[in-house]
Amino acid sequence: MPHVNIKHFPKDFTEEQHHRLAEAVTTVVMEHFGVHDGAVSIALEPVAKADWNESVGVPELTDRRHLLIKAPNYRN
Image 1 (cartoon, rainbow, N blue to C red):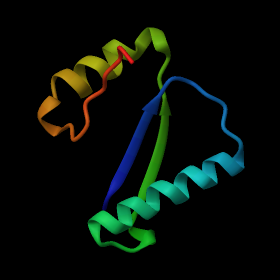
Image 2 (cartoon, rainbow, N blue to C red):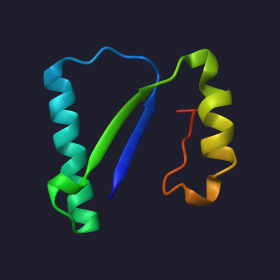
Image 3 (cartoon, rainbow, N blue to C red):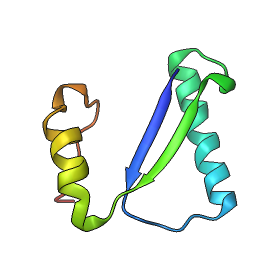
């Protein structure tokens, strides 16, 4: 607890980018949840653009809208 799952369009990350992203997300999660770094887990889940609406848009954003603390604005 807590676990963060970041769904995104496929992108190649270097090990350094993985490390920096994990460090930044972990720091924010620790601060807001009051936990130590060992309690935080993070996953990166690539989703093909063609599958986004079916895999993420509807089930994660539309059907679970009540859980969002920040909604997307795809027009920007």
